[in-house]
Figure 1 (tube, rainbow, N blue to C red):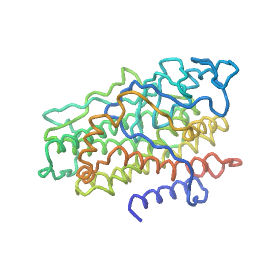
Figure 2 (spheres, rainbow, N blue to C red):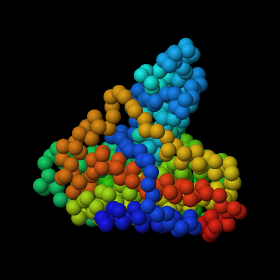
Figure 3 (cartoon, rainbow, N blue to C red):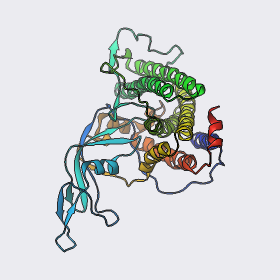
Figure 4 (tube, rainbow, N blue to C red):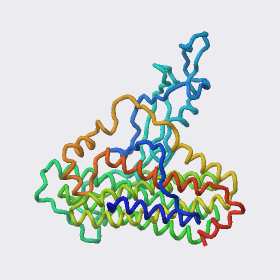
Length: 397
């Protein structure tokens, strides 16, 4: 059994035990492929399509065409809001629909701004992941690691070093944003009257993410040969703190139960492929911490369901229901496979893997395994009828 497989099994068993239910056996079923981090956390304009009609249904008020089966009845594409529900993959992609649907060759197609969410716990504002900008400076402003993180770079070509620097910088910015995400989560737990243990662990997780960011910035700086640090975070003068328990739980399910679980599994996969000692040390820390963060998310959502009842459970169930939606065909430029980052990884895949960087396909496969082997079965257990909820309550004591 390889180390990544062992990591997934261990994390799954920990979560199943946390949910006070027996571990599931071999989980099988359909899985989708998931995207990894984008080069920049900015929307990409695409034409997003899905097969229509589905299950023989027509749809709401979008663009329309005449039913080709005969009879002359207009076949309408779903409305923009309905299309968003179909297209979105919780914790993975979110779509801002910009046009009404147009029926083309048995598919409804929409112009959309698509945001791919990085693995981990992103800081979301209006469903868009935000990060600070990266800046190259004479000093690292304290964002270099306090630990010895010195990868071997002498044997690497300049373009490989630049690709590694870009990849680790991207991860560093998302880890840095996770500090803000956990800070907001701690405030929301306070607003919801959560147990002290959950609030304390949310603050500890924010400190973990600061350490992760420092490790990633240190690696990026070593590869590029100059200090890289985060600039000012774009809060725009305010941070929205949610007080509605159902909304808090749904976001924790999306960002934590799904996002942190995927982050832990991908870090374990990268650790298994890495050969550089400094990179391995950094990824070992990140994988272990992300696994604990995933547990925190599942504990928090379990508490919220017990505290808030069916309304909270329904909001959480809606998040996980999105994992079962059909895969989406997206057309148009700007996909990851066409990005400079994706091309750079593909050109030097073996050497980059030794430095903890897997290609897009390998990361997508790791994320799919996380969904199939951990998230889906854990969500089923979480949402199972629990009587008076006493077993769940024991998790947060």
